[in-house]
Amino acid sequence: MLLEQVEYVRPTSLEEALAVLTEVDGAAPLAGGQSLVNVLKNRVASVDLLVDISRLSELRSITRSPDGGLDVGACVTYDELDRSPEVREVHFTLGDVAAHIEDQQIRNKGTIGGNCCLSDPTNNLPPILAALDAVMSLRSASASRRVPAAEFFKGYFATALEPGELLVSVTVPPMPARSGAGYASLHVAADAKAMARAAAWVQLDAGEQTIAATRVVLARMASVPVRDAGVEARLAGAEAGEAAVRDACAVAAEGLRPIDDVHGSSDYRREMAKVMARRAVMQAIDQARGGGDGAERTRRGGRG
Ligand SMILES: Cc1cc2nc3c(=O)[nH]c(=O)nc-3n(C[C@H](O)[C@H](O)[C@H](O)COP(=O)(O)OP(=O)(O)OC[C@H]3O[C@@H](n4cnc5c(N)ncnc54)[C@H](O)[C@@H]3O)c2cc1C
Image (cartoon, rainbow, N blue to C red; front, side, top):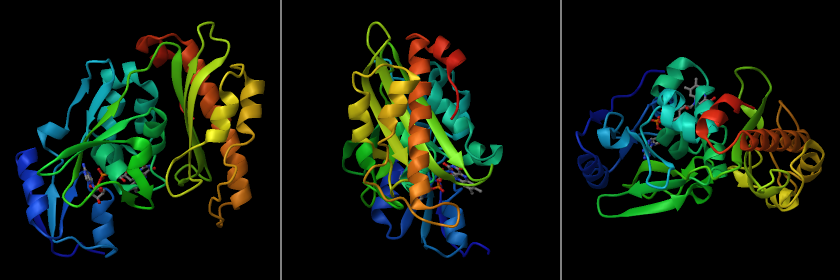
């Protein structure tokens, strides 16, 4: 279906974009357009004015924050995340997740901000950002606020964004010593949406034998990424090895009711969540044992 006629504006500054979004009823930000344009073509939603934020320099940088973490502008594309030396050094897995989103065309246009603001439960970046404890910086014409990634996603295609607000950047804290991240997805076919997905962050104790701290996030088990408190409780203080991790992940997705559909039953998806959680945690442990420096993590990281 063809796009209906719609007004378009390309502001030259963030302030101008925020002013337009506040002043014009029916205005919506356009980032990579990979989802929004399809939504408009399919008449699922309508917009009166597309405010193109994709080239605003304020939203396009990747910088190291003073504490050694990363500040990623909302309009940084997946391809830029993948190719960024800073991202690969500090958060190898984040770059790797971006590198495996769909195809090169989508990676050239799709943005970290669009991926999060759409809040499509099948999107790749929300679970890894929640596992890495990222913080979303939001701005309106009159105020700024910061929302942890875990609280940003509110439901199917729903976020904490208020009308007139933009996500301007995503701050990912530094990787402490002896910590690593992992990510694992199950797809029914190479180009299909994931049925079950897990992202994990793990920090080992000083001897690197037991798990000191962890965050385990499941996706596709609910409308938003969910931290699995049951798995995390079992992992705390556990031996950092396959048997203990398998045992801890045996309770993954308990109490959650993922959808039943032609690709798999709810029970099957829950079983697969256990496997994805185990793989993600084992990857994170492996990465943590690669040492605290990013270069070593870069050599040792891997995709789920
Ligand atoms: C064929 C195809 C396959 C895909 N496969 C995958 C996949 O496997 N994994 C995956 O993760 N994604 C996939 N996507 C989705 C793709 O990643 C989109 O790019 C993403 O969902 C939206 O990012 P965008 O930058 O294109 O945002 P847009 O489409 O421009 O915007 C999406 C929504 O977010 C809002 N928005 C955008 N940026 C901001 C901001 N900074 N502040 C506030 N609101 C904002 C827009 O108003 C809109 O409502 C696929 C898309 C297509 C077309």
